[in-house]
Image 1 (cartoon, one colour):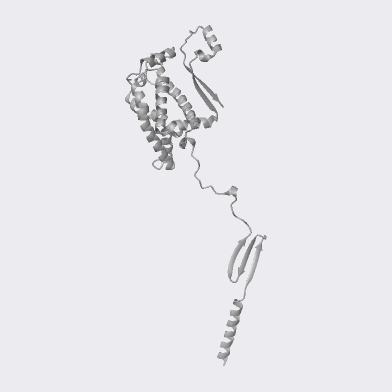
Image 2 (cartoon, rainbow, N blue to C red):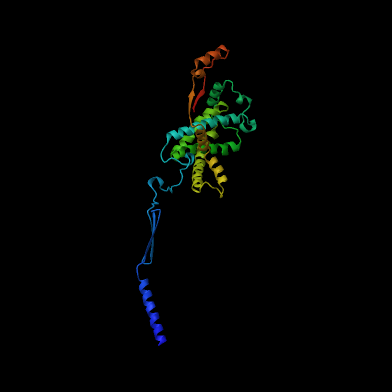
Length: 294
């Protein structure tokens, strides 16, 4: 009898507990009126009035950072950029001539007369009318240095958005008329090797330099896993672009370069001062005007 009563009591408690569990239980809790926790029918939900959505000003930008100008070839012809590159080449060429005057004669083949700056106008005319000729320069200069600098001219045009043939014509113009019959003709007679090798071999070398540069950039600027080796390689593959960027970024100004064939630069005061000082009048005058603004 006690056993039966115990079982009945146990069953009653169980039924009563089951009835209590099946009841709806609601609980809410608010923090600073912004957050609400709700327990409903054993289902746990979390809601908040705070909005974490990004506004238009806070949108995430997953695009790659823009490359510097000297590593980002133009998609279209950019004459202004090519002009800036050309100004840089002019300045570097003048510096190169100054450096070559300090090199031994065994390398440049320039004797004391070639290094003499007196009567420079008549000397240039004599050299131009006497050439071109077969020079006596070292093989390193003729077959390594000249093709490399021809490639430097070529890559300057390629970075400005010009195609292969147009870049070759730019390299030919700069190496032949500016350098061979221009700057270098003040010291020596134009050379057949330089006229041919610099632009033609330079175009081949320049396209290889251009493609190699783009491969390094696409590889994150690394060569053999090293950023340092990559930076050095990128500089020598496009030295004009790097130097032009450094100089223009440093001063933030502009430079204008022009040739002048008027005696004393058409400066009457300078001409009068020179003549009064006893300087001989030279009707053959070749000079340059360089204007730099900051």
